[in-house]
Amino acid sequence: MQRIFSGIQPSGIPTLGNYLGAIRNWVALQQGHECLYCLVDLHAITTWQDPAALRAQTLTQTAILLASGIDPERHIVFNQSANSAHARLAWILNCVARIGWLNRMTQFKDKAGKDREGASAGLYVYPNLMAADIMAYHATRVPVGDDQKQHLELANDIAQKFNHDYGVDFFPAMEAVVPPAAARVMSLRDGTRKMSKSDPSDQSRINLTDDADAIALKIRRAKTDPEPLPTDPADLEARPEARNLVTILAALSDRTPAEVLAEHGGSGFGPFKDALTQQLQQSLAPITAETRRLLADPGYLQGVLRRGAGRAQAISEPIVREAERIVGF
Ligand code: ADP
Ligand code: NA
Image (cartoon, protein in one colour):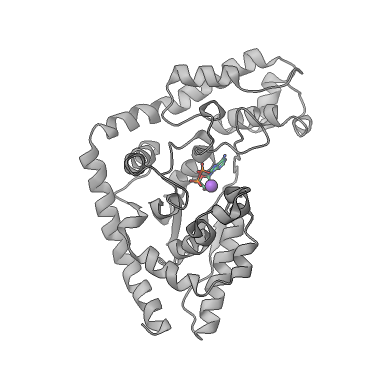
C-alpha cells in the first residue's frame, strides 16, 4: 500500500479553497492508501503566529479534518511539532539543498512580498522542511495543489542529491497526486487571486466554520460582472469572477462547469447566486455541525493528535535515524 503525506498549516480557519483543493481529496485518498495528514505548525511559524491562536487553530483544524471524513483510527492525524523527526531531517536537507535552488521558488517571492530581506530565514528554507515532511516517512505519493508543485520537484532534486552525494539508494522518488477535478478556488473579492485563509479580508473567503447566514452574505457580496452567465464554458475564460463561482458550484455538486451552465447559462447572477448559496449551505452544514460537536471535547482531539504523533514517530524514527547514520552522526 502506498504511503501518502500531506499537510495543512494551522495558520487560520480552513477555507472552501482548502476543502475543494485539499481536504476533500484527502478524504477520498483514504481508500487504498496509508495516509499521514499533518497540521504543519513548524511551517505556520515561518510567518508570525499568535501563540494562543496557533494552539487553538491546531485543534479547530483537527476537528475540521475529522468532521470532513478523515478517519483517525485507520489513518494518522498529528501535528508536526509533536514529531521531532521533521526538524532533524530538515536540518540535514538544509545542508543538501543549494541556495540557487531555493532562489527559484516562486512561492517565497509571493509570500515574502516586497520586503524580502525582512522575511524569516524559515520562510526561505520552507521547501526543505516540506521535503523532510515527506521523506521522513518514505512517502511516495503527495497530494498537492498547483501552488505546491514546484516544491515537490525541489524535494525530488534534494532526494536525488542526497542519494548521489552519499552513494546510497535511500530516499525514494515522490510523485504528485493531482486530483482529477482539482478545483482551484479564487478570492470572492478578486477572481485573479487565490482564496486563502491568510487573506486579510474575511469577505474574500468562505471559512469552513461559517454559518448559513455568513455564507449567504458573502455570496451576495461576491464580485461579479454585469453580463448574464454564458452558455459556453469557453466564454468563462475572460471572466475570472464568473468562472470562479461556476467552478465552485460545479465542484460542490459533482458536475462539470458545462453542466452548471446548461442550467444557469443566459440567466443573471441573482438566481445563480441563490443556487450557489443553497448548495454551499447544504454541503458545509454537516461539516460545520460536526466540527462544533468535536470542539466541545478538546480532550478527545488532543488524544487523537497524541496517538497520531506516536504512530507517526514509529514510522519516521528508523528512517531519520538511518539518514543520520548515513551522514555520519
Ligand atoms: P493557505 O494558502 O490557505 O494558507 P495551505 O498553504 O495551508 O493553505 O494549503 C493547504 C492545502 O490547501 C494545500 O494542498 C493547498 O494546495 C490547498 N489550497 C490552499 N488554497 C487553495 C485554493 N484557493 N484553491 C485550491 N486549493 C487550495
Ligand atoms: Na499555500
